Length: 134
Image 1 (cartoon, helix red, strand yellow):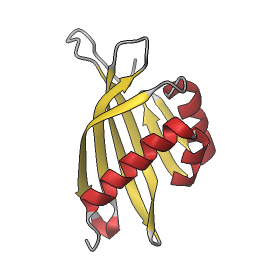
Image 2 (image 1 turned 90 degrees about the horizontal axis):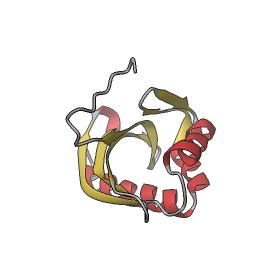
Image 3 (image 1 turned 90 degrees about the vertical axis):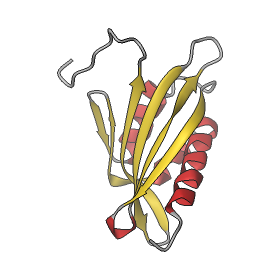
Image 4 (image 1 turned 180 degrees about the vertical axis):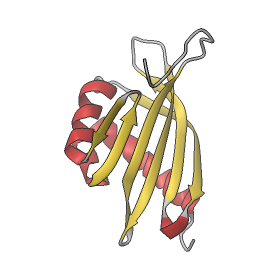
């Protein structure tokens, strides 16, 4: 892979979360009509549906901060980069929630777009269980 995929991942994550905080509608340019977001049992396809969903159900206010603890990147065939970001979602008046978010970045000319994205909130409570059937 000609480009340093770890640098691509780091730059993408920094840009994505700063845009999510400052101008969520600006996230739309990072997706294509074939892009897919999965969060729990919800699946959204295309920029408009994804940005609307993130704005309404996921980010829940301007005060949210993403505290990213780790960024892992794996190069894939055709210049694709799989990126995993994990850390904590922080609101001023609520306890932090741990998260893991996976992005599959696809090349489009000299830039990347989000082909697939999966967001998962992580509970440390061993009694919490999750199933796609819930």
